[in-house]
Image 1 (cartoon, rainbow, N blue to C red):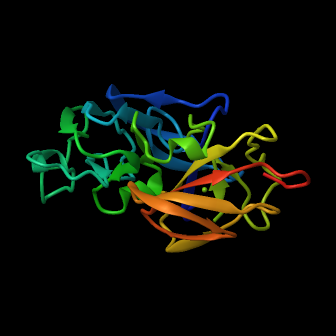
Image 2 (image 1 turned 90 degrees about the vertical axis):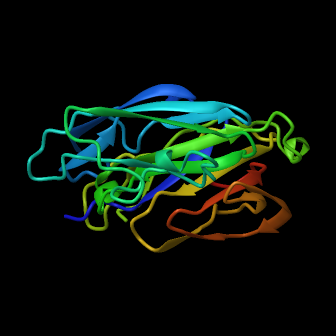
Length: 255
């Protein structure tokens, strides 16, 4: 069975979110998961599907210790992590691609990635950069907050909901066509508040068209770069892309 492509939504003020950083350990383990009702072996960061959201502020230095505790001999047991979207100025050694910037981290070993977000803010993601291992689950969102965000006046709430997958899972929950009636993600919002959503495609599928019934979305960030506000009814998002949009809940709309 193919592991589902992952679409990750990060939304303000949602309960139960798991956030770490900018100094943190990532324990890479094998576990059986069934986010869409079908059980399979996966590669997970800190035991989560997808991994915990890593956060920091503009100007922070990230120190992320990746500990390889993989045990499943039917899958890759070494790993490396790429921090997608970061410039890695003077830290190309920490960029993560196996056999390009580093040797893979061997099982029962660890490696600490250190890099700066001195000039960057916005929405990023991290994923395995060894073969197709990230399609087995090793991926998650990253957020670098800007205390001087030029779009701050356009939204009221920007915290994070944390994670999310054709099957399609959203925030780690979903259903497979013809499969069991698995639980779906519910995003609780308050009418009249303006929410910043951070939409991240952690997908192994090429693209999705994302929309919310009865609502428009105002895009304010694309791939960690601020954008002049643009209101749309849907967003076409490809693997690896990130969008921030502002949404005001409407009466009768569904989230």
